[in-house]
Each structure stands twice: as structure tokens, then as C-alpha cells.
Image (cartoon, rainbow, N blue to C red):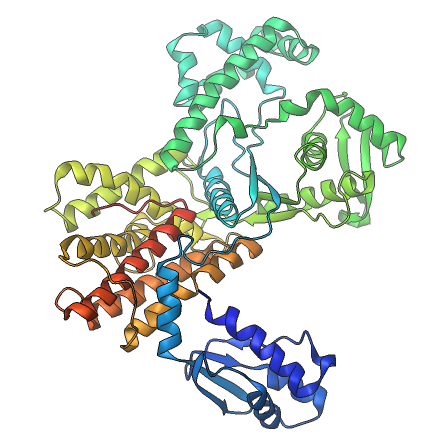
Length: 573
């Protein structure tokens, strides 16, 4: 099966060469949607300037060389020089039938690459909050999509598991007991443990002295201190796993790649940069000064890779990370799904890595910038105390809101079914709301809107899938082997289905999951119109068989598309 654009684009390109010569090979055919046809070809407008001819004359010459008799029922010149193409019902029927028999549902198998994706990255002994929501959800959707397109995806969860706070955390762990209830707070409510440790550090001079001494021991590799540090990391790992399970993301323990991973490499990394003349000492710190990076009053902005006290910071571990991902993970593509404010830092790290020869030509890391989540006041989402909301609390609230919607809209559903479906709907609602807007833009966290069964929401798409499942369950006839497109609404629905593979490929290329959300919403709306206008179960057997097949294909594409977004499609709802 083929999408309309994948068939039409090469034929228009061939017609351009046939009409105007080889020097016009590679000209963009400029295919666009149209209100007057299925596809509009706008190439004549740009070509007219180069050829010095009226656009309509150019369009007519293109039409004369176009071979579309097997694909289109109408090809005509329109307006100032457009070509309007109307696909034939026979071609749509044949391609939709082929799509229904394709286990990949039109998804291309791309030339495989090794794609390293850095996302989520919480801190050990700290709560995952709303700031981790978008990086985790967007990163996971991209990982799922790229894997489905045939790439080897290497997830990297660059957790914060090293640094000076671990002195006070280890001392507090010793004081409360390694197997105490307070210690196990790290598995469910890590902020409670962290805050008590911080309060003791700030208010107890003796504790603060012990904490500082413990940092020295940690950095020196003291065996007992490292054992206690590993215990803290293990307790936090269980907490991360809890959040990821609740959120339904694919990150596992095998994807953990914390800052501590690179500890043994940092001194040598600094030596390399200094020996190459890339890093120099400034006010006791080892820094990289890059051309084009200046701050106030034109002063150069340093990338500090070793502090004046001899410690290392984010820049050092980030440089070690990129070197590791190129040399050891053999990345063909590097993606950083990180907040937009980190853009300057990342560019400086990448430019330094390029100067050092650790980032080869042709490998350009991509910052998938993450925008903020806002509250109803359109300011950063906060709790009443002014803190970022806990991620687990947001999930709980979303599940509770979904349960209220199900209780109100489907009281006929068994209680056990509503209890099982509420987490699927609540988490799906949060994910879809996040993914349906451009990842670098802001959005308002509004649970009433997110969990609505109407409009551009995750629950609307999930409900569309359950409606189709209900039709297929109630039918006493199997879907037919062929889909015969006759009615206008069948036609629109079929064209949306045929575009699915192209849309997913575009998400993989442009790293924009909101395009898939928009497509699935359009598909669900097209199905709703089809359902209203084209009886399925009451149609005569031949028509019923075709429409059941169209229903089954729509369900398959919805489930596949939602799955790429990390959203479940409940059996009943």
C-alpha cells in the first residue's frame, strides 16, 4: 500500500523533468492539501519565475506530462496555476485494502540508525515533580516511535547521583538506620528524607561537619561510604521505578546512566582539554572560552570544567557523556530531551566536544527543547506552598478525575472495570495533553479539560477505540477481505488511514509527537462522521463486510498510534 503523497510526489517530479528538462530535476513538487481536491500541486508557481512563463501555462505543461490515470479520477488546472488532483475511489479502495493486510499498518522500515536519547534524568533522594513530566513523556514517545521505525534506540537516564549533598544524606541515613521507616521514605516520598537532612545540615554544626567529612570520604573512594551511597541510590531506584510504572514509560534500570558513571574519566578528560589548549585556567578554575559566547558588557562566558576547589560540575560530566555516547555507544543520532533553559549550556558543551574531536563531523546533537507546564493563572504550576507539584500526586489527581468522569458517564460499567480503566484514562489524559502541543511550547495543566470525553483529548481517542471494539463484538459477521470505498465519509476516513505511515515517519524525522496527536484526532473525527453517515451492522451483507473491515483497520491504527504515544487503549470504557 502507498500513501497518496508517496505516490504522487515522484510522478510530479518526473513530469517536471519531462516538461522542462533535466536541469529542473530535484525541484520541490510542492504538494499541499486542498479544499477543492484531495491534493494540490503548487510547483508551477515557483517554476513560472524561473521559466519566465505564466503559471497557468506551466501548470498545463505539467498536466500534459503527468501519468496519473491509474491513481486519479480528475486532474485539472485551477486558479492562478494550481493543479488539483482528485484520487479515484478505485485506487483508494485498493490501497486501503492493502493497508488492512499490512501488519505494520503502513509504517516504513527506515534505514536503521543507533539513536541515543537522554531523557527524564531525576535526582537521587529527591522527588520527581512536574518539571520531570514533559521530558519523561516526550522522550518516551520519541523512543517508542523511533524503535517502531526500525532504529536501535539507546535510552539514557542521566540521573543526578553524585555531589556534595550526599555527605548529609549518608550521615542522615546512618542516624535513622539503613532499614528504618525513615530510610524507606526514599522509595515513596524522598523529599521528606531530603528535607530533614537539609534542615539538620543547616541547623546542626556538628552534623554539618560530619557531612562535609563524609563528602571527602566519598570522593576519596572510601569503601564503607561508597556502600552507603549505593544504598541511597538503590532506594531511589525503587522510587523511580514506581513513578515510571505508574506513568507507563519504558525506562528501566538498564537505562540508568548517572553522573557517577563517569567519575573515573573526569580528571583525564580535563587533562586532555588542557593539553590541547582548549581549556585554560582562569581565577583558579579550568575553563573553556568559546568564540561567540559572551555575557554582559561583552565579557566571554566560560564553560567551567573543573572548579577552583578541584571539583567537577555538570559541564564535565556532560562532556564525558557525549564522548561515551559517540565512542562506546556508537551513536548515529544524539537527542537531548531537556528543558529549554539548558540550550546555551548544551551548545557550549557540544562546541567544546567538537573542538576536542569527540563529536565527529556529520553528527549534530539535537536539543528537543521542553517548555513549561502552567497552572490556571498561566504561571509555572505550583502547589499552595509554592513548590512544584509531586509527579505521583499529579498522577493520583488525574486518575481520580478520570474515575469521576467514568462514574458519571458510564455508571452501567461494572465497578471493577471502572477501577481498572481509570488509571489508563487518567494517565492517558495527562500524556496526550502534554504531547498534543509542541514540545517547546507551554500549556496549562487543566484536569477537567484533559479528562473530557469530547474534544481534542486522550480520553476522546480512547473512547473512539472502545466504540469500534463494541461494534466488532456485536457483529455476527466477520470483516470482509476487501474495503470498497463508495460514500464520501468512507473516502475521507480511508485517506486519513493511508496517511498514517507518513505522519509517523515525520514524527521520527522532526521529533514532534504533536503531529501524531493531531493526526489521530483527525482520524477519530473522520471515523465519527463515518459512523453517523454509514450504517455498519444494519447494512446489507456485502457493504457490512467492507465497513467492518474499515472499522477494524481504524481500530488498529488508533491502537498503534496511541501506543507510540505511550497511551493504552482500554477494551471497554
